[in-house]
Image (cartoon, rainbow over all chains, first blue to last red; front, side, top):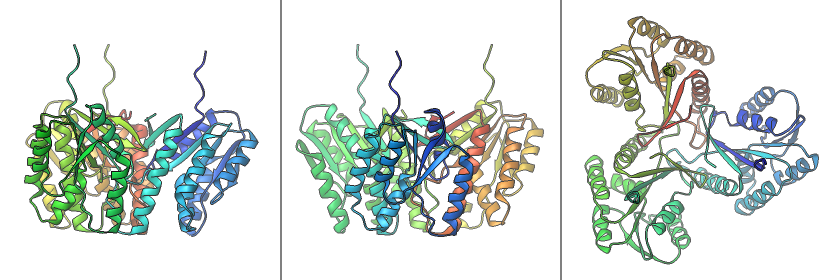
Length: 174
Length: 174
Length: 174
């Protein structure tokens, strides 16, 4: 008898905590290549473009990328049809993109969580914890912090496994 | 033979990490209704007023509220006399209020910790961890960050149980 | 048969989380006095000078201090020759000093990690986790956050033991 697989995993952590690398390792361990990489980053500026290129290089071969800076639910549907383990990197950039597009974050968050929890393939979602600093000065940052915290809680509630990352190390929270 | 009850609990975490909900659950588990809710928030502006109203609604029935934006030690004395499990939500807003009132934070922190540790009823104190971001630009924020860290350490040292929250999940640290 | 000693320890945490005190306790436990204290702080202003003086006072007797705001690798070599357990407090101030000196942080980080991992004496390095807040507004702070995260990951990868601190309590991550 084997224990049931971890279908939905949340990898939570700070900036440069090793979240993406951990997420990639978990997806590789979930099945043979090719794996699906759902990329939510949008290259607004040179700093972000460089970060995207560096991440793609770190990732290496074996990944089929779906770009989904906005329609993440649609991308998950496509990824599910492909029948391969999926990495979503990351929820924080998607949430940023949707906030800048003036979306209804609560409604879209609910739809996203339902989609993540309903996939037939294993999925690992990477997300930032952003609430452990001093209260930000500007209202938009405070609203983002609240929205990110609510989304992380909702995904974690449906996840089979939640990891908290620091300094490249994983701490299992669920 | 049963293990001794957890008399003083600290629930530590970031913004929107599920601290209040966790604190409420622990107080509910500590005894039958009504429970005492010691509220430290002050409704300076519309954003804070909305947040207070939402928290009160989330909490539901069964709670007797004591407002204590400043005199938290006095409120704890009243709560102790009521003989019911107490939730203090939260130390961070109390510390903010006292800093803005130019109080002696070290002395008041010591008095608060002594009061929390001396209650006859079970008490759960919610507090923010605020030191895990980049050093803040302004000196007041840095001073607050130091004061909050010192207070959290002092409460944790006297607590029977300390939980660290992220994404609605609790990690036991003590 | 005894388990091998913890030669390199990383104590990670936020501001005022009890990192220094924890680091001191670990070094004291690693052998008899005197212990070597490698101090990376530079007293730019009154606030920092006061912080340094307070730390020195908290530390008490039994410590031989080596000041190393910039040449940390050299200080580690001196400390190793002394043959005593070493506390490095902290990597974050060293990284700040090197960034302000326009150093090549990636190359210097690699050299530092090699030096830390190559010591014959037990060493405890204290470092800040700074990536768990909202993305900072200014580019220098973002660059620092990335550099600190990369350095923490590199040290943690070579460490025998990694502790995450909050409210004065230690959580073992490795």
